Image 1 (tube, rainbow, N blue to C red):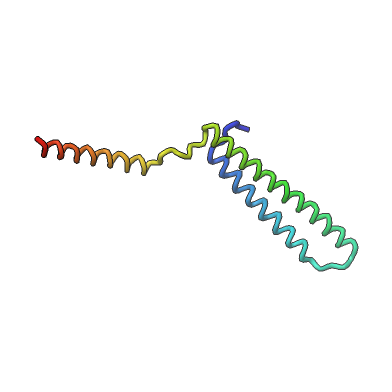
Image 2 (cartoon, rainbow, N blue to C red):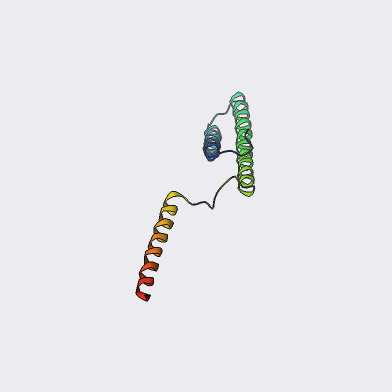
Length: 111
C-alpha cells in the first residue's frame, strides 16, 4: 500500500468501511429477530451472530486504522487542508486587482 494515500483512495476506504459496518449491523439485527425454538436453528443463529459480530468489530478496527492513517497523512504534510481552492484563488486575485485600481486612483488624487 502507498505510504501516502490519495484522497480518492481515502474516500473509497471510508465508503467501504461504512457500508461494511451498516451491512454487518443489519445482518445482526436480522438474525436476532428470527423466532425459532429448535436447538439446531438456535445453534446456527448463534454461529451467525458470532461471525457477524466479529466482522463488525473488524470493520470498526479498520475505521480506526483509517483515522490513524488520515492523522499521519495530515501531520506529516501530504494532506493539504490549508490550501486554497480555485474559487479562493480567483477571489484573492480579484481583490488584488481592485486594491491596485483603488491605490492608483488615490495616487492620482494626491497628485
